[in-house]
Length: 347
Image: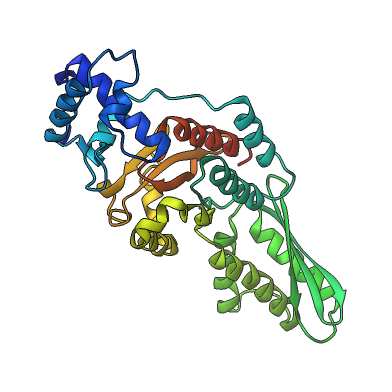
């Protein structure tokens, strides 16, 4: 019954189905006919409600756990609800203020990525995830500063004015002319290029012996570029915060599912690949349970949204992962808002 159109349901069935799903997402517990009948606005007897629930179950939209007389939505039911019946709630003023305040804290972009992941986790009660931007910024200047005792400070300045520095352990006495020669050489070949592009071009020149650098300057250049190349390769492709939130009270009775989920989260390359599939989405994309192979066994859902730089280019994806009973109506706009707020910081 995948893809069953909502229009085939009677108005009564639609309303009961909606209330079961919303009740389950709010409490995490199956919803019974007595609970539904206690709502006077339905004006239906428990027997009538049980009949509708049985019909919805036969259609594969609801299921009855053996430990409860109530019903809960199946993955198919959740998909139908999310796509056609969910009433999205805008983030509250408090949630909006918290997201914007956390991302506005001074610091490098990496810190903003950490904060985005953390605030999503805090507000959703699940785990927050942010893909690290893959687009490298263009660089403007490189410089080396003698720190004494065989150490030098290598400084990179981006076209956007961002500054990063690393300390190099050179050994021996550093000659001022060698520092200046290395600085001028790299800057002349770095301007307007990414670090990878500049490193490749400089590597070819040094290997072919076409440079006029002396041995000391060449050593400084190679060490200066190497420290950033190693740093870039070591940077995570994905930042995950709040995984401990997945170990809630409900997880105690389903520890194998949670263990499977935590194991999946350890494979950050695979998680990043899943998030990357949402890059072309205009807004948040929702993966429910077995709809994605990575988290299918753990019965988890992912809500992901791309974030863009100031020129509108997609540079990454962020989102939330948690049990299928996530409060989609609340979390979806929260993820979208965080993506928009983070994008304003990416140049």
